Structures are given as structure tokens and as C-alpha cells.
Length: 171
Ligand code: HEC
Image (tube, rainbow, N blue to C red; front, side, top):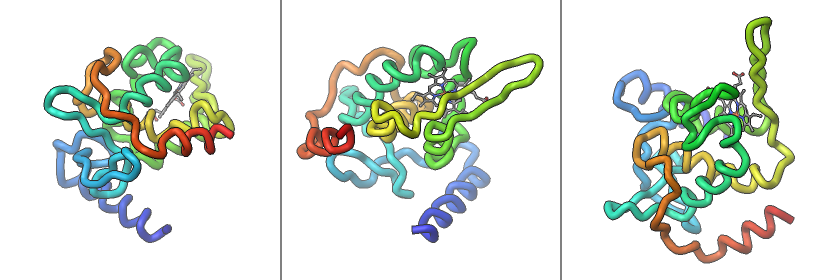
């Protein structure tokens, strides 16, 4: 739906302009709906849901594991960055969900005489792409200051249908 996407992008831009407290490029992270255990914010972007007792939603927990397996070697524990790659805790303060998807799918390069920064393209890697929303959700929670850098201790139960969808994606 191109119109909805454009609308969401404009809304996100307006939100950034009008609200200096907006925590990230996707706007207010409050969860307003869910589908099969994956929460969405009011713009329809994937988001986290963390209860007062610290229990995290299933996707946040999966995102922690997948981030750690596929991204941490460059972007550092908890997304804090390293000498190889920038902090994603910082990046997600301004990056939208669609920009995030684009970069992870297609990669990004910043190569010059003084630096050699290459973000690999993961578009054909099911270990990343089947979990891309979970990774975004985890990093969004980190960027928003809602989650520490340790492995989440208490996790909501696995949603019905999650395993079937996961198996279908992994093929
Ligand atoms: C081999 C090292 C490496 C791995 C592994 C890696 N990245 Fe990156 N990533 C980079 C580098 C380097 C950059 C900066 C590229 C640039 O500045 O052009 C980057 C940039 C990014 C950006 C853009 C940040 C911005 O400010 O625009 C995102 C988003 C990102 N990576 C997400 C991920 C995710 C998610 C994973 C795991 C699925 C991952 N990266 C795995 C090296 C890596």
C-alpha cells in the first residue's frame, strides 16, 4: 500500500519535527495492536512490549538472540557499537523501520582513504531476514532505553502459530 507507507513516512517526519522527545525514527514506540504475538505501534511499525515486571514480548527475546548471533560481532554487545561498526542504539534514534530494512537487506558502504566501513547485505540470508522484525524490535527497545544489554530473563510465552511461520520462512 504505497499511500499508507507515504502517509506513515510523512507522519513520522512530522513527529520528528514537532516532538523533540520522539525516542526513535519510527516515532512513539507504544504498542497499540498485536498480530501473532508481534506488537505494532500506532503507525503500524513493529515495536516491543515490556511489562512492568520486566517480562519482554517473544519478538524482543528472539531479536536479542538473532542480533547476538548475526550482528554483534560488528555492532557490539547490546548494539552499542564497536571499532568495526556504529552503535545501533544511536542509529535507531533517527532511522525509520523502512530505512533499517533497506540497509539490512541491501547493505551499506562508507569507504574512503581514511576508513573502510562495510555493512554486508543480508537480503538472501534467512537467518537474518526471517527474524528481521524481531531484530528491529529488540534494537528499538534498546534504543528507546526500555531494555538493558543483558539477555532478557523473563519472556512472554511463544505465540500460537509462531513455529509454523518460522519453519515456513526458513524453508
Ligand atoms: C561485518 C560487520 C557487520 C555486520 C556483521 C553487521 N553490520 Fe551493520 N553495519 C556495519 C558497518 C561497517 C556499518 C556502517 C556502514 C556505513 O557507514 O556506510 C553498518 C551499518 C548498519 C546500519 C545503518 C546505521 C545507520 O546509521 O545508517 C544498520 C541499520 C545496521 N548496520 C544493522 C545491522 C544488523 C541488523 C546486523 C545483523 C543482522 C548487522 N548490521 C550486521 C557492519 C556490520
